Image 1 (cartoon, helix red, strand yellow):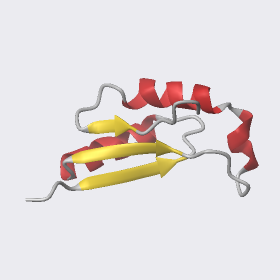
Image 2: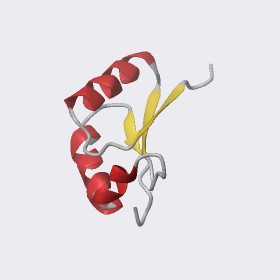
Image 3: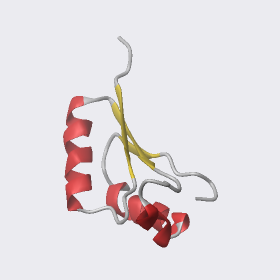
Length: 77
């Protein structure tokens, strides 16, 4: 049976409990959840106010202990 993978993207600026809850719900329904923080967005200038490495660290703190949830963090966010 093929693995079911959910992609959960967002600015996560900052990630909050609502993001965590969404990841928990997805993890209960899929084999794996990939959290993907976005890069710079011209349609959301505020995203760039918090540097990528900080948003990546916050995502790691928010989602790091959840089973079946992985973070797709760029090496130099």
